Image 1 (tube, rainbow, N blue to C red):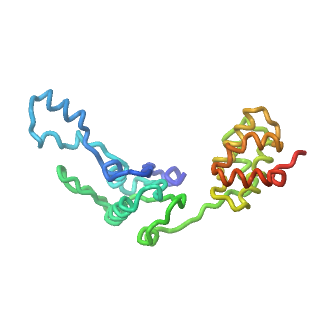
Image 2 (cartoon, one colour):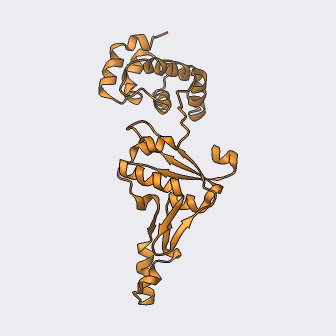
Image 3 (cartoon, one colour):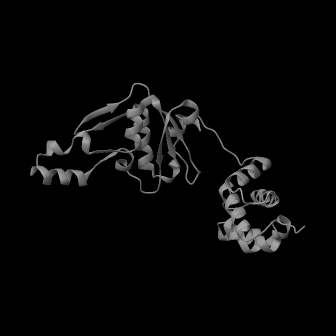
Length: 231
């Protein structure tokens, strides 16, 4: 949305456990290099590390784009501490050194957005350089709208009852309170089963669509009658 409003390209770096610098910066196209060697019957290393063999990854692409791009670094908390430190260095300088080609930099850096699900604490050095914004659960009516927008076949009454039940669940001391994605999944599951509204029996049968932790499941089942009431 931000990229669309600012008329910039959106470049996304999806973080995950085990991500390394090559997957974020650049890699060499080894298959093309091998074909080049075979075609020319040459092993000249200088010929093998030119721009035509370079595979841009999100960070290099963002530095080259500069202020024409929005760089989304998604779920930074899933990466390890070492990658976070590396990322901090790149974002501080907005330049990347490629030994075979040279240094790539930009005068006007891209706009950078980082997201975190709080699976681990981020370092203070990174947080100091960010403007922090907490995105809470949407208001009740807005969440109903989201469910109906993402799943148009879901009856309005079912969407209302599902959002009401999920809202009650979030007030419990759960290990992982359900997010909007779980609300949508639950509504879709119930709709697939032909439910026009949420009943206690249907909730019992489909809780796995919205509650994803064993202890949470036990807690919700204990008080399911307070969360979902028939009629």
